[in-house]
Length: 181
Length: 308
Image (cartoon, rainbow over all chains, first blue to last red; front, side, top):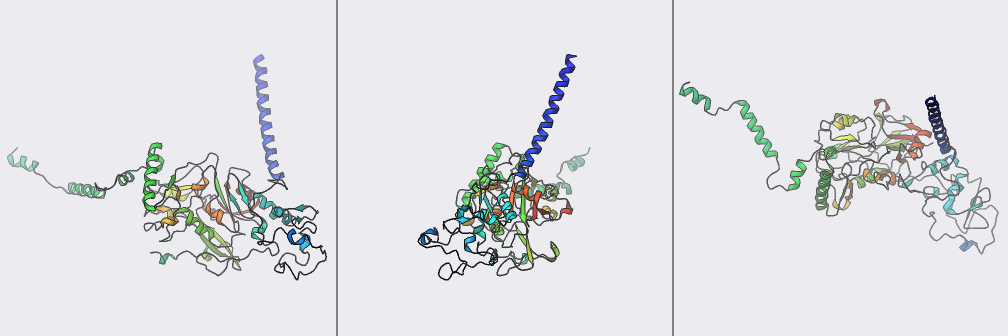
């Protein structure tokens, strides 16, 4: 009799453990889908933003100026910057660059962010690309497949003012089989 | 028995069988390394299949090869024999909606893996396909050479070893010089390969390449970080192929393969198929994935996908 009780107890315990593992495993898996790989504000390993030489910090020139919030064509400075293929009719400089703190970018929420976090700015509109980028699918990721990974900022491949990827010359084609001796 | 009969039995009579035997033995002896050949040649001549070598024998082989390559290329060369990692099955993703056909991967691979520069050996071949036709290999072009890529109306599909889970190439090898390792990488023992090229005929992806001549590898361009089953300098007359850069990926600090690192558009993805958080798993579970020649049941671990 005592033996039988023991059997029941052990069987029950085993069943409970199995169910717990299955549920926990499932929950763990769902966790993976529900949580982004990293939180919004956490840093990604990125090289420094690709500034034109000598242009940063912006405050060096801008600190002495009174900001002019009026939308206009820039005639004296930054004439090389052309908004192209990037909703140029809908927006201009101060939609992304902060008016008061020139060394920062500005999210729609008004939050100021560093240039090294510019992916958050781009991710406001390009949410699907942002998700893929954080997973390491969109864009290039170097480093170690089983360790520390380095990302590139959006701006390293896409000029933020003219983001379409520019064509590049290809490397030499392979030798034709008949020419290989 | 008369004297004549005894004599008839004792004199040397050369039968056809004996003559052939002698001829074969003589020719065989000629094929052996000469007496003045260095010990290294004798050793490589009698080296066993890599999978049959004991630890001590592997050490000897490695030190012999390192000495040999060091002398040939004038710099210290490392020959690794790192085994597969536990719980790792390598998978590769290639984003067909991003690839621009610039061939940076082709030459990145050549530089990393010590392929022959002359005659030319490329492990990666980039196909140019027409968007209207889709993946139609009959109309693929790999000698395209415009001023700039990508070209309008075209997309590009690089092809390299697919590291099949069910590889046809290893099955046809008559000497078992090529096999699939536990991390899914199909490798070749260049010292055991007899150069029959059956595997090249069996591979549906054209991923295996033959060294028709002694590989022309300039000492200055030689990558001294090598693996025995991977990118060590090859002799003439053996078949070689992509190994997912095992000299990089099998290490504890596993760097991405050279083609992944060099791709300017980030179209190439690499990771552990058994790790649910790896990027390759994300690709397979969330993107449209395309497998080349899926109907052949080779079960490649090379997944083409469309990220958009």
